Image (cartoon, rainbow, N blue to C red; front, side, top):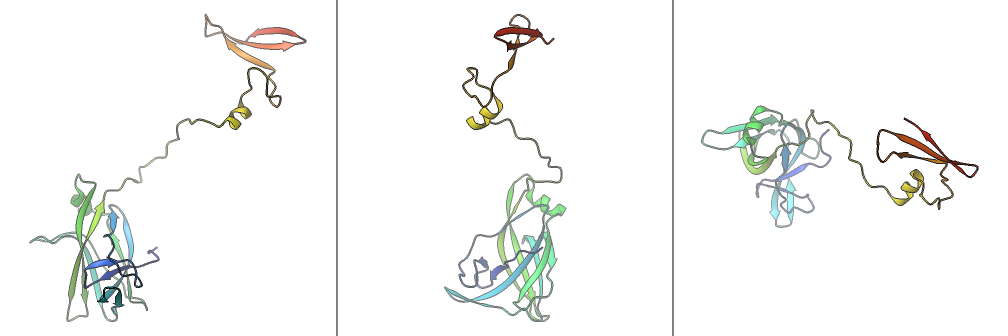
Amino acid sequence: MASENPLIFDVDSEAFIRSLAEPSVISPPAWYADDIKPLRFQFVNRTSATQVTVRSGAGISLRIAVGDPAPTPVVDASATAGSPDASHIFPVTLGLNVAAVQTALGSADTVTRILEFRWSDGTNPQRWETPIRLKQRIITDALADVPAPAVAISSVEAQSLFVPRDGSNASYPLSYFIVLDEEDSTKKYKVSLRAGEWHVEPLQ
């Protein structure tokens, strides 16, 4: 499912902005290797420092690519957008689950790459570029949940599980206890009190 809010791109600043109402430039997005990103893009022109206008997407073909604009361009991932909706928002699914993305990351956990848009009405293509970050993911299909280690418990929990040695908690009376032989830890004994007399019974 695509994100509810579109990524809004100011073509004059060649940067993403916070919103139509608050068009301040924001940090470039960070996308994770192995993801398949359902994205939505809306494009604007800046009319002043505090105002932008939405560009019409009618009749526009939009392509995007992530990579390195070297003399011989390196494309990590690319996609063609679908038709824009009534708000001139283009849907596009960008697959970052490709070998080229892992090659771009190499042994790094994060790399800066360039996101390029190609906006065309069929006769007059325009291009804009902006930096983004590609990040190595932590969670994989091979990830297995492991049980948490033993943790301390509260005094209330302790009282519900253990009996005080002095019998001060009448809610949990002690009827017997088990002890180990100090000289032979393989031997256990059950110690109980019956009619005022102690009884010791070997368990093993």
